[in-house]
Image (cartoon, rainbow, N blue to C red; front, side):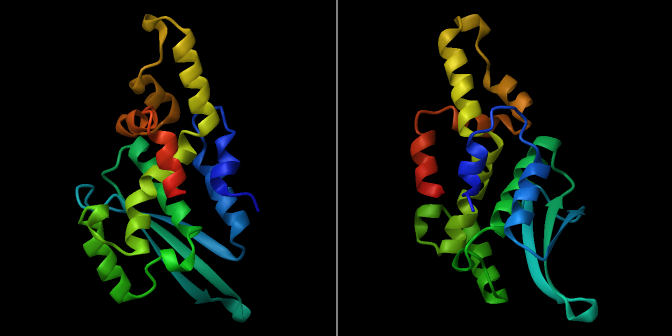
Length: 192
């Protein structure tokens, strides 16, 4: 199966639909159920979202992996799209990139609160880079290339601003500014 980043990189129409990302994940992982759970107790200032996965045995012994994407109700629509995409990508993570036990989750929470370069485990690194990996899906390479090309060819007064790109892509403007930097492509190579 094609890598999700490569699969979405050719998109040029914005916004990328979360339903398309959801379908990709469902195609990748058979016999799974994905539930979105808005949590009014989850404070945006603490945590935008998290993924809780577990296995259930259903009627007639059918085993199903349930992925519950829990998100703060304080998120605006752009933040919610980025958060949900990030958690959908976590479903595709390799097992050694996930926190598998209660002890691992506690360690992960500690590592999320420290800088990524402070010596963390793979699940910690994975969580630190999750929003950037979601950005690569929601503002795909080919769409970004077209925007940069148009901005290069247009006069200074008719170039798309980061705010306009944010509105078109339906993602927070701060993340658009990251994707517009010269370092973005090199960063993508490191985190994918």
